[in-house]
Length: 105
Image (cartoon, rainbow, N blue to C red; front, side, top):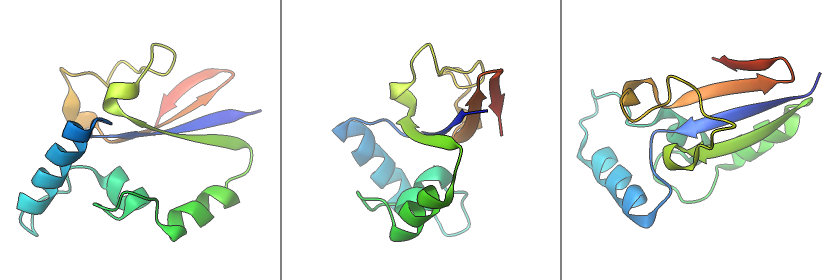
């Protein structure tokens, strides 16, 4: 069974979205929860490129395509009921889609 794993960031893909995320990240205290733990995982927070650890991890994942999307890049095909502007607290998310449907993890 083939599947796709979507990493959905709690940030927008635009330049303004990246600046807003950076501002939020820099202004948080060390005890605050990260504004996007997916960004921390894949880009070590504020880096513009993926970390070498994440790139290596993606190569070890077999049987699934990895797609990384910002919240403003979700299409109807990938959209999930709980990934909406009205309910942003669920982001970031990891969603696996198989030929049998979607499952949020």
